[in-house]
Figure: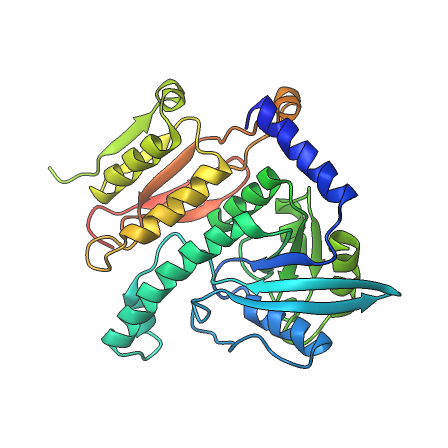
Length: 211
Length: 117
């Protein structure tokens, strides 16, 4: 990014600060199986009583981005209205043979792989239309993946607020500290979206970051 | 002799290329089974575009995607001043041949397989 682009970005951030939107459009991003839909469902259940989509251990369960508008979060007297987009997991490779291991027929596996590739493209396109990102990482996995590095780099280049959610802290080998060490320049909130652990802290930090 | 072709592309060559030209060259090389090493890497936007282009070209029979690994860019005083974050060394290969074994801030360890994995 050149000097002009940098100045444009700084001007855009100042403009956004002066003319704050009454609603923020937040994308939930991350690699497949990090728990993005589980988190989206947790947020929706807590604040609307509804859910976003079905959760599964099979990678690429979410193959179309799902948008839920007007989710109102209230923390410490502060109110925040969000449009939440649950995006398909971003991956650099998709092999239909992987889905066969989950007992799918070849036809079903091929269809899922095709839809998953379209989902990745859709998730990347959404990056242009967001006001902030919740990047979900699996605390039990290596955080230094190319997908995480690419998403963080893109959000930084766009000057958007980013909150890293270190999910699955209920797992015995979880290490949110590893995520903090890999991305020290960003706020990391350790949670378990499945069990609801530390979820109130996440809402408080979301209100600070996106409010 | 069975082997794998490596394309090591210099910073100078990359700087002369437009983004799309660079990404097309990378993807064409990788689809031919070659491993591409870029001396100066890609910007985050180019990396996202590369993933998007890869997804469009997956055919599930011959090309299932790429393995791409780069170090996070380091910010210098001048890059902060100019808002520039140049990518650092990046390795890209066909997903069925290259597997990343580990990655740290300054070290990438990859396994390259001769036959299809």
